[in-house]
Amino acid sequence: MEPICPITSTSANEISALLSPPSPHQLQEYYHNVFSTRHCSDITIKQDDNSGKGVYAAIDFKEGELVLKDQMLVGTQHSSLQIDCFVCSFCFRFIGSIETQIGRRLYLNELRANESHGCDEGSSSNSLRNCDEMDSTDEDESTMRCSSGSSKTKVPLPDGVVESLMNGQLRLPCTEKFSLPPSVPCPSGCGEAYYCSMSCAEADWESSHSLLCTGESSNPRRREALLNFMKHSNETNDIFLLAAKAISSTILRYHKLKANSLAEKGKYDASCVFDHYNFSLLLEAWRPISMGYKKRWWDCVALPDDIDSSDEASFRMQIKELAFESLQILKTAIFDKECEPLFSLEIYGHIIGMFELNNLDLVVASPVEDYFLYIDDMMNPDKEEAEKITQPILDALGEDYSICCQGTAFFPLQSCMNHSCCPNAKAFKRDEDRDGQATIIALRPISKGEEITISYVDEDLPFEERQASLADYGFRCRCPKCIEEET
Ligand SMILES: C[S@@+](CC[C@H](N)C(=O)[O-])C[C@H]1O[C@@H](n2cnc3c(N)ncnc32)[C@H](O)[C@@H]1O
Image (cartoon, rainbow, N blue to C red; front, top):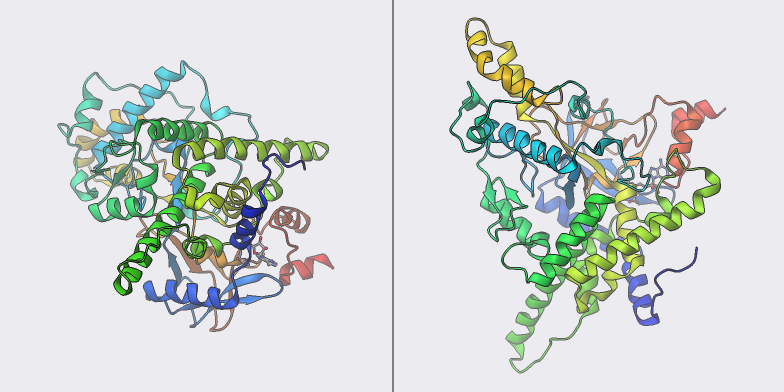
């Protein structure tokens, strides 16, 4: 493949340092910190020559037991579904109230319908758009609860009802049983990010939003470039939004480390001027991202079914060009000279490739679905009374009323789990799991010392199809089921 973004020799050394696999010591130190901040001692991470890092049980687990709750490093809601669910931009909990969830969705859908003049968004045939992320939760129940697209005609509500749902004047029956945290808007007023609490707002600001916010604090040039970047991502592939978060969080960590280092130095030598670029601090800031298994996006993205293998090279080149285009816009918005290697196509491609190979679907079940199920389960005459108000709302929402929050996220511990076609664990959201954390449950008893595996593909597929899908991850499965079926 021709280089479309030449790398200078100075940055080449830094890029290769950023992409070299962490040493066993760095690995041990990093995961030791992750485990201790989370007070997690039930699992460990070990590395072997065949499958790299893997997760191992440090205790015995019973069938159905929780193996791991993993806090994401970066995550994003799919942009096309943001209208449907009003969630915290940091932890992805539903926020506001049942009334605001419904009112906002009806209002925004109406707006979208007016804007699109009848164009059908869901039927995009662009193979470059939102290429599949790694999906090991396809079969989980919370994913299956989701529905999207509705063929049934929706019945509009009388004028003023949507407004009164949104402004809180209309209270629906029994919604007090489904209370949600009140929404906290981004303090910088971007109107894009909302949170379930000030602590989530602060954590997001510190983690990446302070660089990506289009509110008052950003200068007009940067704001315009950011809006441009978001528009490009929404129109092409929202994985770019996640890459922007990963780069922003590294830049912010770098400046924090640098400030701490300056303060520390100043303690011993007040005259010391230490304000230059420090690559070792950039390496340290990059550490959480460095841990994820990576390949270039255009080398590892699965070839879509509608692309013939004879067109593979040109497809991969298009993917590379798309990444280049996105990176140029991002650079206009948040370029930082001291973190220059992060803005190379090589690093950008590897970050997105890391998401491609490791990400888990982000799924949070909708309280709106629970609410309507509750009404449906009520006894008469209360049910009849309630439905006088709720049925027209349900008719206006249509059959996809229960749509859940969906997105994609990178999880530091879950992403270390290797694949097996006869896995002993699975990503599975229980009723109580109402935020964006990954939840891994034991499918059968797991003994202390055993490797914990999940399936990256549908394990009921025939042997050859499983192997073909796993080839996108760059390995051939040698699990007991594959060994048995191969012979
Ligand atoms: C989500 S990561 C899993 C963690 C990874 N082993 C690491 O070192 O970070 C996926 C990658 O792990 C490796 N992998 C996962 N399952 C494997 C298996 N059963 N056999 C060989 N390699 C495997 C492949 O390189 C795959 O692309």
